[in-house]
Picture: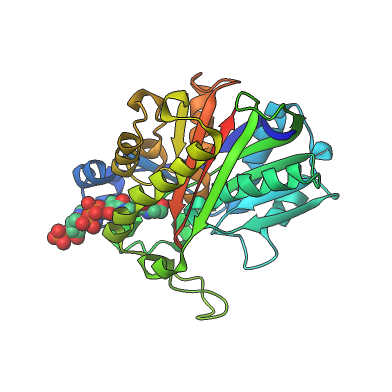
Length: 323
Ligand code: UT7
């Protein structure tokens, strides 16, 4: 059977690092509160000349180089983002142009913090249906542009950045030791809208708006939703927490990640935690964490990786992939 195999990856971070102590100067917060409640120590914030498109393009170039490919080899670009450069055209099309790609197609995917998991799942479907051979999947965000910098309950949590992978159609035998995406499970439930949303948009306020979150409410649902969808991935494959080499979750909060790993009996040593360095970068957080785990030598070809995310909507999902 056809499998979608990851053949390259990369990331791009804005130039400017903003530490918790920097935020202490502009809002009523403390390094101690942020670290204790979230695990975040710093985040990257885009400068004026850095955008979702430019960060995404840079991450894509690294991923293509890593794969030993050029845009000529790519059929489709899927960009997961909730912070596009413009309302339209899709920022994916902008990135396609920046990369000098004139063939194939590109589109944006909007599932907030679950965007990368939704985009990877969509890429897998295009590959399995034979509509694409190689897909560039990018998660790129500039959440700093939709934050209310006077709201301490949200502005300390998020950061900017981008990550990308290239997935390629390869033959597998259909067993769980195949390389590639083994299973993916997506969920959404719009009844939770008010808990995490942006209070603007073209069809309502004609403004971009600001992120609004009832953090405690999101927290309350997060662990249950995450574990539920991961258990669906285990049930579909017959794999268990013991089989996992690396758990690479969406990076919103250290406490959510720890509690999810504990509930699922995933060994702490297998958890890739990068929220301390990047903050919550929404759809970029998983590919940024992948980049860290590859760069420091942890994540290797053949490893079984569990990706998971939960965010605005609510949306949530899980992917099991053998690297
Ligand atoms: O990626 C999408 C999904 N998003 C998430 O997963 C976020 C989920 N939620 C969370 O991560 C946590 O709920 C937060 C980190 C947002 C908040 O942590 P918490 O332990 O749930 O704190 P809380 O909202 O219950 O607030 C506790 C206290 C409040 O003061 P009072 O009412 O107890 O006097 C807040 O006003 O902390 C106060 N507080 C702050 N204090 C210092 C809120 N923000 C800050 C701040 N600095 N930045």
